[in-house]
Image 1: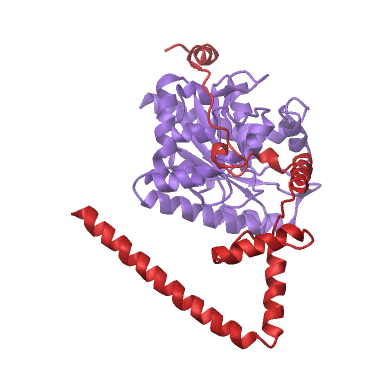
Image 2: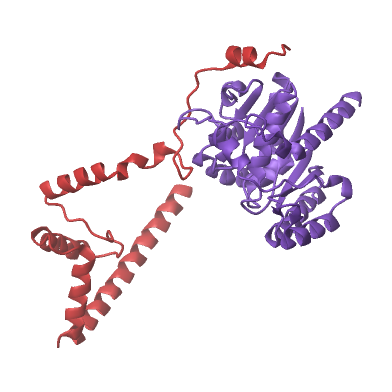
Length: 265
Length: 136
C-alpha cells in the first residue's frame, strides 16, 4: 500500500480537491483506495457523503486506537466501488492534544495504518491534511511515503509552497520519517482564452524554480466544473469535462509506476 | 488474505460505539450537551429560573467573599430580581466610595485582611502539622 499525503500550510490551495479527484481517478483505473480525512473541517468526508454520527468510530478513534477492530473506522463510499474512507468530524480537533502528549505523534498515524496494511489489501492510501503545521498535519506527513503539494498559482501559493517544503524538510531532518516529494500541482491556473494571467505566469515561474522539473504536474486550469463535480460526488468525466482531469491522469500514472517498482523491490 | 475488502469489512466490523464527540472535540460525557443551548432549551431554562425565583448573574462568585457577606447579598438579590450580582456589587462599591464613610471602609477592609491572613497562616500550620504526623 503506497501512502500519499496531500499537504499545504495554507487553506484553499486544493488539498482536499486533489485527494478527491486522485482517489476517484485511481478507483476508475481498478485500484482499491483508502482515503483518510485528517482535517477536522471534514470536507472530504462531506464531499464523499460519509457522515459519521457522534458515537461512531472515526479518524479520532483510529488515531487513538479506540476500536475493537480497525475495520470499525473504515467506511465504504457509497456508489464508488473500491473507494473507502476513514472519516472525521469536528471532534477530530482533540487529536492535536492527544498527538502532542503522546510523545510520538509524528509516527502515530503511520503505526495505525500499519494495522490496516496487515489486514486489508488497499493499493493506495491517500491522506488529506489540515492547513496548518499542526500535530494532525505532521502525523499525516509522517505517515506518507510521498507527499503532493497543491499550490495556487498566486503569490500566496508560492509563499505557502516555500513554507510547506521547509516544513517537510524539517520533519525529514528529524530522521524519524523519510517522505519524498512526489509532485507539485499548480492549482487554479487562470487562462484568458489561450493566454495565462500575468500573475499566474509569474507564480508558475517561481514554482518551477523551486522544484525539480519532473516534480511539476501540468497546471490545473481554473474552472467551475470541478466544483460542480465535487458537489454531486461525481467525476469530471461524468460531466464530460474529462480533459480537465489531465493532471490527475499524469499523477495516477506516476503512482502506478511507483507501485510497480515497489513491488519489484 | 481475501481481496474483497467489502467482504472483509462486513466480517470484521463490530458494533462498537464510542463516547460521543462534541463539536469542539471534547468528550460529551464531561461536557454539557451541545443541544443544551438551543433557543427552546434556553427558553425552558429561563422559565424554570423565573418559577424558582432564581437570580442569574453575569459573573458567578468570581470574587471570594466572606460567608456572612455572601448570605446578606443573596438575601438582597432574592428580593431584587431587577439587579444582577455583579451590577449590585458595582453599585454598592460606587456608593460606598463616594460616601463620607469611605475612611471607615478602608479601616474595616484592613482589619478583615489582617484576620484573613492570620487564619490562612493558622490553616497552613495545621495542614503542615497534619502532614508531618501522616509522614510519621
